[in-house]
Image 1 (cartoon, helix red, strand yellow):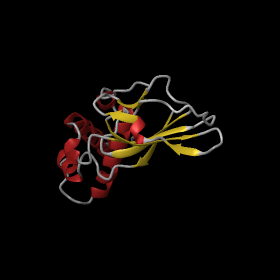
Image 2 (image 1 turned 30 degrees about the vertical axis):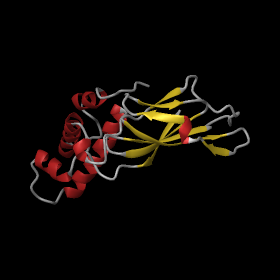
Image 3 (image 1 turned 120 degrees about the vertical axis):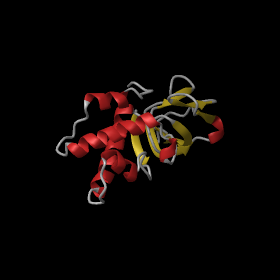
Image 4 (image 1 turned 135 degrees about the vertical axis):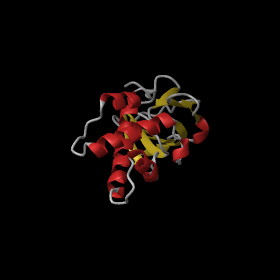
Length: 183
């Protein structure tokens, strides 16, 4: 299984203004730095929590169909499934008819449930690609406060310790505790 980000978020879970207020920064001199730290903190938080905070598109690639009729999509929370494609043994790509599957967005992680599976012989590796949309929503108002708080804490730590790339244990724990998927 392989996960790949296709479309990154178009906004961040915490605004520059909110971060500046948290950091007690009044000038605009560090706006570019704070913007960069916010993005890096979101990316690190998503990596540690194995979640998507703001709406983004992912692809999950598999070598074979699942043993059961359902498959976990490992970047919660799931918003929707865009497409399911597979490559047959002759290297021809096929799109699975969307009427033959549905997404379960209410579970953690979200699931893709098939009504039936294709019986075609698949290419040896990377045969199945599921494209899906994940995240709490397109706006920072959709992101849980506990996640925004952890992002702000990490931004503050990096702002004060500019040479550091580490994540303090308490902030790491704040992100890791949000995991729905352990792999």
